[in-house]
Image 1 (tube, rainbow, N blue to C red):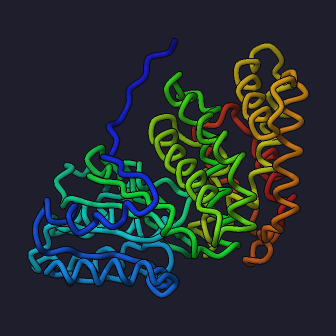
Image 2: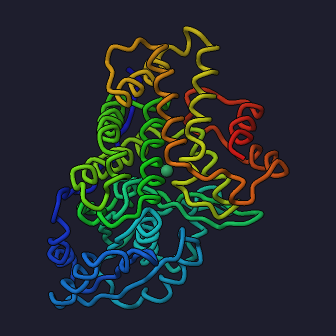
Amino acid sequence: MNSFSLLSQPRVLFGRGEADILPSLIRQFGNTVLLVTGDGTLHRSGRLVSLVDAMRAEKLLCYHYTVEGEPSPEHVDRSVEQYGSAGINVVVAIGGGSALDAGKAISAMLLKNEPVERFIEGQPGYREHDGAKMPFIAVPTTSGTGTEATNNAVISHVGKNGYKRSLRHPAFIPEFALIDPELMLSLPRSLTAASGMDALTQLLESLVSPYGSPYTDAVALSGIEHFSRSFMRACENGDKDIEARGGMAYAAFMSGIALANAGLGIVHGFASSIGGYVDIPHGTLCASLLFSATRENITRLFEKGEDAAYFLAKYAKAGRLLNADSSLNTDEACHALLEKLESLQDALTFPRLGAYGIGEKDLELLVSGTRSKSNPVELSRESMRKILEERL
Ligand SMILES: [Fe+2]
């Protein structure tokens, strides 16, 4: 067994109705809370409005910051400027991955008097953050990024010289992850599908990462099992099927633990390069590329023969779980995995990259800016180009 290290986890409260205890969780840290949400989150669900009312009824002083789209350095800096001297005791983010990443980044920067860009990995003049931050409570309302479990916040600066990179420190793992499937009932089908495919991508990529461990394998496989049972039900009957919403919330949380401890592969490599280049929702990008990228990985691994048996056996485990068929041998299970991913892509009609303005002319630049990350096989530029060309 290879050496490995594990990050800590947030204290987790999981289950229907658990969100009701949010005011008492906040009280553990003080009376003044900065609530961070996405622009659509509170309007979408009466349940969330009542949650905010409950916080106010408890005489908590509640400031509210809304993030439109994925968090940028300007969002984070602006909120810190606005609330840095407001006596905030705790940051609570309620929403999808963008709101949670924004809340995590704001909690990390409230005690600093510097622009967040200085602490973003890979930026010129990068300095390591010392981990001093405000307490942070993550309340996900989608089932995708798993950021309620992770030690990083993804910050995007979209454009020609754009980037999508992380602010990271072990201390950034939320103090609490409050995961209530009831908050997910109002999530529209398209967001359920895209965020769910992000979770599946993270589960698969961390499962086949060279930096995984028996622990992350178990976590990822447990997540894939629940995804398999719940995903289509959550897409088709998501406003009523609380069991399916719970299964997806669990799968997404497992994906967060797995990725934080094992790393991610080529799809998330593209998520960094393409996500910094055009404004494309992260889940949509993962959903669009997962089948083509996994097929390229599996094809290259089969070419390597015996050396790659370890990774193919892992893909096969995922194939058996996603097809609920434990009788398949490795070859059959890898093919069944690809068939399943292709059928999800077809059934849910994920947009192509062309819909976001990406064409042949952009491929060279995008491929040269993409790293394989913790992919099970090093992909050539031709392989990466092929994955993108198929999805233009
Ligand atoms: Fe992701």
